[in-house]
Length: 466
Image (cartoon, rainbow, N blue to C red; front, top):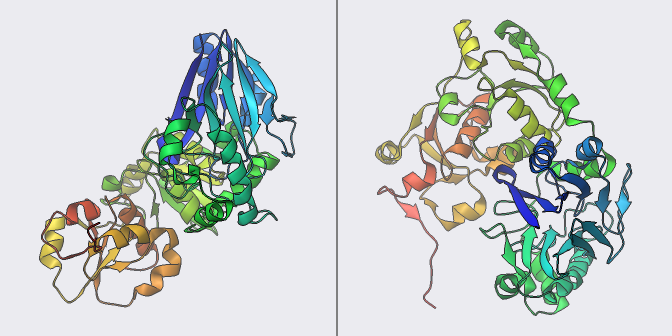
């Protein structure tokens, strides 16, 4: 019997797929930490026959090389693909047999030149589902500006227009399995679901409507925000290759005593990264440490706010050190030089100094709001800010924090009250401001979600009745 599993990783909004039929399996778009696919195959008593890639991913390092080394399965890419390692470059319409089912190659350039979809035909040779990579999402399509080559986004958008016309000709009941879900920066505004059907997307996806090529190109290329800095690097790594994940983990997991950790901190370009829960971080952290907790979109924020060549010293909950390393390696960050043995408690118990962040609830902010010496700092995206914010708040977008800090005055006597939507991003911002010498800080528990439920004055967009 055929079985298709979507293996979804929420913090990256990424979907890999495990296809199984009659003792054979194939993996589509695997994550770098590929042990789970090997374990699934062993548990089910199937052999991994093929590894399929829909394109060169920009937002994560794929697990194709490690998985191929462990299983002997060939790596399949679509037409126009060139790599620095052995692959099978599939041709348009080529079919790959997996047990009693087949994957059919549909070259769909647009997001990137080599972007390819794989149509799964069931035991009766009927189209069952299609793995669309970043060509077609739920409610959106892949951005045409992430390729980073000599081809313009307008040319790629034109190619995508043609590719989508082909997908629209598939039966309406064919299931759409994309590479990403909501929150991914590979599209502009992905829907909440992680799968759909061709018929549903023809009705609801703005990019699947019957419009002219010119109208499509204008819609696809407008409103594109600057992609995270690590995207271009990840695409290059996926094309050229990388070192085995086991090697990365082994060299990174170097346990350091509090004294050794302190000595290492004096080296150049060292970043102390604290991955604990935000509620633990605020109660005590190493001075100068940056908070990015595992409980949120950890890898994405590491890639947005840290440089790829930063040397990282890790502070994590005991037992979470390896997870921190692996989740950074998923996006190509491999410069962890050691971790604090025993976690933050070992630092604190050694008598070394530490810093704290004061947090308040929304009701306390309401009491302080009208004082003259406070500045309310909203670190959400501009679109979130425009949809509703506190009157008088300053929008310092976390994604572009360093460049937007000129909106604040570090010499001011004002106390900065920080908030985001729920509290995770504002704690990141608080740690960054501490590093830059800002002293008078307050973090607001619950963020805008909690603030908007008080009687504080809000600025909301005007809506006209239709």
